[in-house]
Length: 193
Image (tube, rainbow, N blue to C red; front, side, top):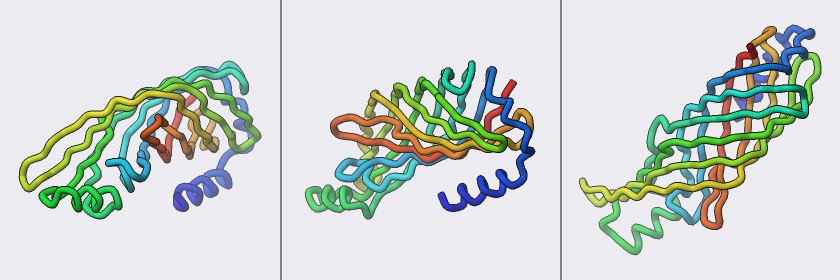
């Protein structure tokens, strides 16, 4: 995350000052990030890489709507988290737990404030997340799918690279239920039409 903030700071210094007018109209974006899970679940210490696509429309700083679709890029294997060690103590044949994000979708209200070089924005909406956990015992695995949905919110900062291109850094609570909490940290590019 420290690298992302460093990249953002460099982009602020390189940005052309008169670009705050790209806050209205349609836009589309692509980004990558990591989804993390919470402790005491099969997603304890998980870092699941994802790719994400976004599209939206900004009427002005207070009125904006955005849709997002994402998919997992790779599974995350666990042989050392507290959750895994507790499960292995109960079942010595457990050799590994594999976690992955299959897909996710979200719809957000996106208010933002801008100045000459950057924007600060919020995300408030609803998300659905599909994940999969595989419990390995030697060479055989038992898969379990989870489908979760709920309120999603986050905060992001974006810098104007040129008149139409923006670079964004985000934190979002992707989905939270009684038993699970998934968060994501994302680097994203968006293009204003």
